[in-house]
Image 1 (cartoon, rainbow, N blue to C red):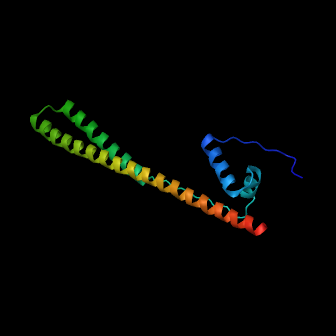
Image 2 (cartoon, rainbow, N blue to C red):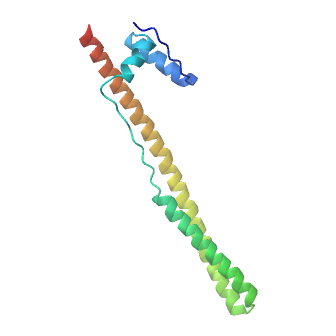
Length: 142
């Protein structure tokens, strides 16, 4: 006899999704949730975060900061024209490096956005597969 009750909260989007799945399957939420929880199959999608790009970008940023700090120190100590000219060349290189960092960041952000979209699509495919498997299990029980 099922006489114990458990309550949990969902945001509106998940509640609507759960309702639509239950309507498609022709079952109530309680039986669907019980079936999902105690199903022998459990699919866990592990999403790995690749930190290599962030590590490289942080190192580049640190290098640029060290170069800038050294340039500022040199400029304060030596006020000769040769050093100032050399510093200008290095500043141009730093500017180029910063531009490259910005481009790499944009590529990384686009990659991250596409990765998230792919993960959403994968999640939807897995959910649809589970719904079809649930229907097959339900048909076998009838």
